[in-house]
Figure 1 (cartoon, rainbow, N blue to C red):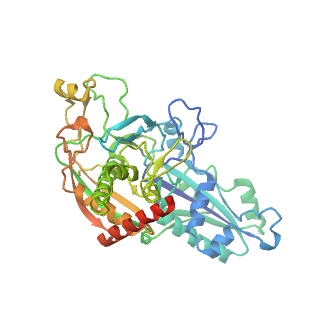
Figure 2 (figure 1 turned 120 degrees about the vertical axis):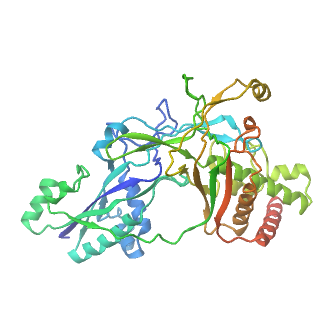
Figure 3 (figure 1 turned 180 degrees about the horizontal axis):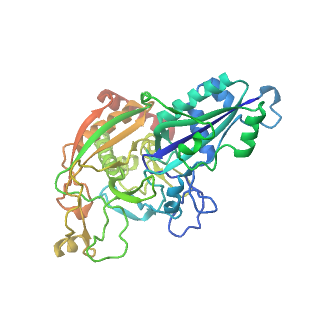
Length: 468
């Protein structure tokens, strides 16, 4: 192999990223992100290579992951492509050396939409706007093949994507910054080009500035806009508009401070290319997801009582109210998800995190609202102060795998339509009469009421047969 392709690009996060390190010795977070010995977060090259491989056709995927069927007993061959760990821009590294966003996540009680005190998590995430320096190099038998792979790599980078495990639920999204890609094809049979490679390497220490590459003979190409790939997930979109003030707690209270609310509004950290940190109000998606789940459970219980003539006790076993109880109905358990000490499964549907905005007016908070003594007596807790948003609009994107059973899609669509009646408050029992926001159903993929009735009945019979 005489030709070596070197490619460099900048990838910008458009949603928070959590690639866990697996460590449990960090005092302020349950799930820290992976960092090097200097404390700088990075994206492992294997994570990027896996995302790239998933986007390639069979021909290039076989090239990327070579296997020799005749020599199965021998060790696998190394890949001809090496993807380096991606580090943030040097200007951002100082701000990211220590955790800048620790999120407080809780499990909600479905009947009251309040947090369970023993289901509390503190994951660390990397903020929106973090720019990573992508670098890879591959060996080819000819410059023509190198150029062919460059086109495939450009499509992958220009299309953007998402990183992270199955627990990410819409986080870890990125796109190609400035749609630029720098590359150079080296002919290693030429002494001068081989000398360049040995002297300068593949650019792992690249500072992220395009101007620093030009003197080394790198070419810059601007990738044309890539049409979004066909959606692989069934989707519905809800529009949200703050109506009477809305408070979605970030989960943490912290120490009381003068002129500050005790309960913080949910917000996320952003970082720009110069390393300056900022914040923006956001809906983590958990509030909408909790309300959707409550309504879907209500619909299923109603169906089981009215159309299957089941007793209340049996219905509560199949679709329990308490999140601590696991459903005896496998289809429901897998759809809603469950959490157990040694294992668990996330729900089949995702609700993406979306920021609040109200251009061109600046999004502001109302003055602090203090729950009075009457509310304090009813709620049986100390009086507290919170600061709701007084305006803003957002969108809620709910999705399911495209191959999900039709009854799941129909159940989600019906639940969204019920939420759009705007009869349910957004908060728990401490929010008395506090509607907060108005929902509208803006888009929904196809669904079938008949599919819901027939498939749920069939699933119910399947569950009874499994018991017997």
